[in-house]
Length: 213
Image (cartoon, rainbow, N blue to C red; front, side):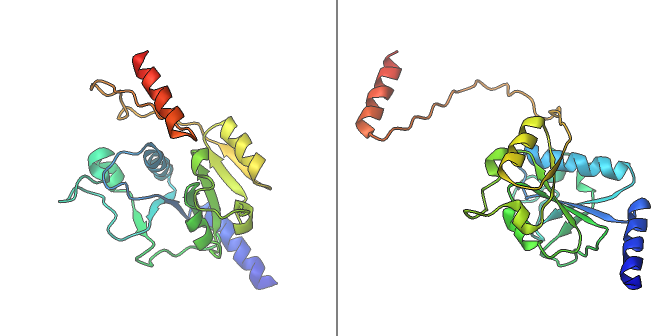
């Protein structure tokens, strides 16, 4: 019992002294600007400026930080200071977490939520879009089954929604803005309209009338 108490005290001490790791999982965008990934980088950058040991966690060793023959990397579309942030690859097996550490996982990656279920650290879901919540979950599965109790989200609507579909969650709201590098295109905009119907003949009739109008 005394040994367990000492471990708890040690973990609390690490948290108080900022001597712990925070790992934000993200995908490799292969040089394509993505708002969700940019938001994750902004969180990590801010945490590091505040003195925390925040890191980007990704899947493969070939995560593209800088431009190569295959295209742009993080440095080209976000900036060199973001490429300089410490990155840890799951594939390299160098990730070592303890009870005082935190792993933050985007809502789209239920596969990572499942893979990390036995991690000794706190795991938190970072919810930015309701569309991907059930992307990699089986029917009947919920985050609570895999030990997730805490969620960071970006607005009240998402907080209300996720608490309506999963049980026992604590949600914290951190509003986000739109960075300057996401600007309106100067190119002419071409509208795209998708139509769906059970009967192809009915669909064609609607489309033909639409074009006539």
